[in-house]
Amino acid sequence: MGGNLAPLGNEVIQSGDVSPLGERRLRLSRLMRATYLFKRGQAQKEMMTNSSLSVLDAIVAGAVEEPPRRSPPEAPALGACYLISDAPSDAWAGKAQCVASFTSGGWQFVEAEPGFSMYIRSTGTFALFRNGGWELDQIHGSAVVLGGQQVVHERGVAIGSPAGVAVVDIAAREAIENMLFAMRTHGLIET
Image 1: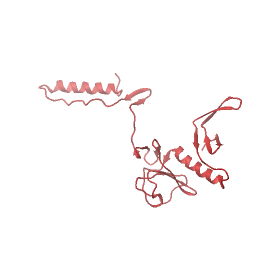
Image 2: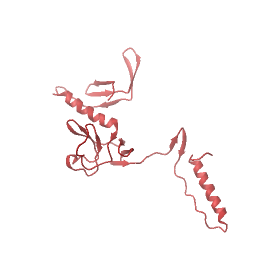
Image 3: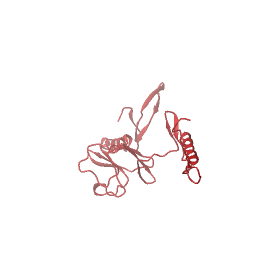
Image 4: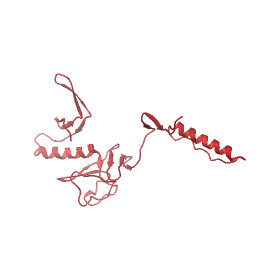
């Protein structure tokens, strides 16, 4: 985790950037926070803080070793994170769809929330937690923009195959024109 980490009541906040606004005033941007780290009179506050920060580190880093799996690996590396499948076993029993992080104190689990996105190191793809499960290798959106140019739009109507005319050349030319029009409309080729 980076700098700019500070306790605030029962929370720890971390900001990506700090800009001075005047005397005793700062603008914090890219805030992250962990709540309920410790309570008044609690023993071993540093243990709870370290545990909470390791969980925060696991979800903020947003990278897991492989696609969802049912059981823990035999020899996980310290700090390694995994997605748990919908039917876990062994040490992960009862932790379906969670993110598991291996720490010096054993496994830490974070219940996935809608919108969690994790990079899968083994495949170089992403997993998105949506509709109660991990969706792999999917991109959701209404457009793809490359270099400021929208190149893919919503799906257009189907282009018919050349057929039903005496001279196939005329129908083939029409089909090719329709394909070129669709490709231009989607920004795949110049207009």
